[in-house]
Length: 381
Image (cartoon, rainbow, N blue to C red; front, side):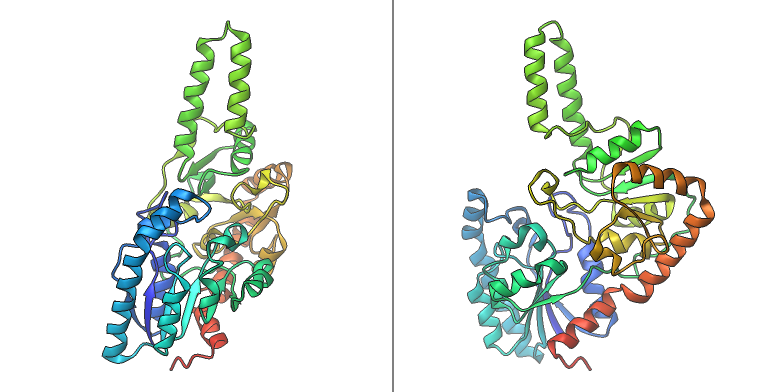
């Protein structure tokens, strides 16, 4: 097939602009399957920065800049379709990028349309206008299937996957006991702080960890300078609690900036235990705490890493806990599992190898796209 794609290379333009994770996971597998891929020649990164229609500033930016994107998109698609015909338009778009009318214009050309959005667990409002305009929408949260249908969209549910051409085991020493790679938000700080406070060796990499630690250190110094003024000091402590939502402080000396894609894959092999956290955003502090499958849930096993992740039902459909990955439900259980597997290398290695074999067998993007195209009724040969 000839597929016109509009997919930003990075899954996180704010914190990981240098990453090419979407390109490696979504574009390369299409080429591996023998499809011709035409890329949208446009800088999509700013649209990921001003993405949330809940903010007035973002909405104003979108209204100003979206028409330019839509014009370029339609012009490039018309040109590519005229040259040799397009079999599919595949995007990672939300309402910030395009209006429903633009997608309908593409469909009028006789081109099937497919959109992917991976944060429907807690940001479904970001595609509520545009999703119904597509022929099909890829989504990764099974509990949102009915919500997509209520919007008038046509969802295809798939769990996350990984591209084994990039995510693969590395021959490196296992010089980290425990590591976590990901953003600093939600209840992650509490878990990391607990592990560190119990004397276990943990290293953390990702956006906002170093920034958060610097802010907390600055606030601590300010509190120390006014220690005699107990009333003011108490008020500032309460202020700190509101700023950081009464969460534990970031442990000093264990946080590091984000890694590039290659170093990330190496980290999974370097770590005896790779941690996974499943809470969506700050929903741990909300009435309804949400969890979801993440890219990391497949990237770590596909890279040959031992994975210790929060236990929940949807992930249990992909990997068997205790045999292919390991799970925890509480801070205490997490600590117990960390101590156990650090001292039981043979069992840890058995789970690591089984997780890799399962990921390679069942959870590649190549397999996911074959399933998606079959659901769409596309002739791929």
